[in-house]
Image (cartoon, rainbow, N blue to C red; front, top):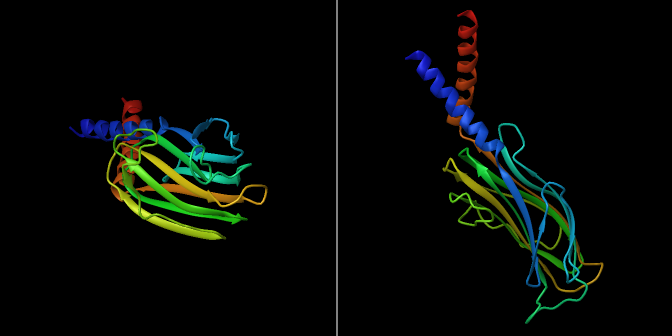
Length: 220
C-alpha cells in the first residue's frame, strides 16, 4: 500500500509538470479591422497596414514555482493617418497574449507598468483565465481593469484561479488621438500564477517519494 501511495503521488506530480511543459502561446495585434499574429517563437516587430507598429518580447511559463505569461518591453508607435470613425477606424490598437495548457490553481497577480508619449492613452489592461483552455478566451476576468493611463504608471491587480486546467490571456487596449512619430508608448505587463501551498506540498512530497522509491529499487 505504501508503494502504491508513493507511486500515486509521483504520478500526480509528473502529470502536473508535463501539463505545464506543454503550454503554448500566441500573440495577436488588432487595428483598423485588421488582425496580425506575431510568432511567439521569434517575438519581433509587426507593422499594421494602417501604420501602427509594435515591437515586443514575451515569456510564457518559464520553470519555477510561479507560472508566468509576460509581455515585456512593448514599444508602440501610432498610425500613419488617424481615422476615428467609420470604415477603417484605426484610432485603437489591441494587443493580446494568450497561452493554453496551464494546470496549477493559485493566486494570480497582473502587474503593469509603462509610459506614453504624445497623444496616446493606455485605455485598459485586463487579464483573464478560461477553463475551456482555449487560446484568446476571455471567460473570467482576473482582478479589476487597469487604466486608463496617459503618463507613467505602475499598477497591480490580483485574483484567484481555482481550476487545474485553463488558459491565460492578457488584453491591452491603446487609443491614439493623432498620428505620427509623437504617438508612442513603452509598456510591460506580466501575469504570474503562484500555486497554492497544497500544490507545492504535493510537488515536494512527490519528489521525496520519488527519491525514496528509487533508493529502494537500487537496494532491491
